[in-house]
Length: 310
Image (tube, helix red, strand yellow):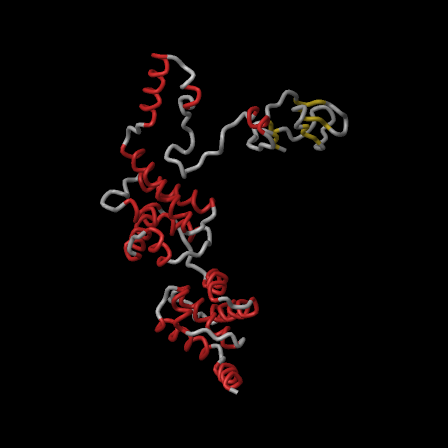
């Protein structure tokens, strides 16, 4: 049993393995014979919790490291402005100069990261991404800068490519059209940059699952949970019959929702579904025909259409 770096498996007195680590006292105790095997252990665990201002003043560690800051949050500022104004004359001028020099970033990588992290936070906020995805995107971008992969490419396109890669890794569905709207970079350029950095950094990303897109599309189309569940069922059947292979996940998800809406008498036009999914009406029609033919839904669709007309 490993306890804070102390690999004690048995009590040296009685040979028992029934050991207890008392965190408050910093002791390892044998629960059978009562021998104190180790004492004065140091707790190396993180201590970031704060329940009051008093706790904050007693906190013995800083904030956790994060790639969303160019220095990973390790910088310590030279005094606060309130403290500096309490100094007099030359001392005040001296510390203001030091503070100004501290804010001047020396290396090209640091300058690039400082600007890129601001852009990354803006795009992540626009797309309403969780902090885990934002931090992963920042890590990918930092690695790309360190490997020199940013040269010859715009900072915005590499940021967008890193965010798209992070979304794919964390199964947070965002389309290239959404990235284009958020970053103002052409989606073809984002796609090229994304493929380049994932290849050069050796990042393995599995294909998107169409099911991941269904909740967002259904919410935008104001479809019922019943229709959403039916769409998921259609996609799963299509995957079993390998109908999704080689097809875009957004097109499959959109077509499945279109079919499910027809079956549940919540008809939406192909134009409405295409606009929400960011695909063309032709894509919706093609995927729709494949789904109803291969899954044997033609008769049921015709029946629902007759009922709707009646």
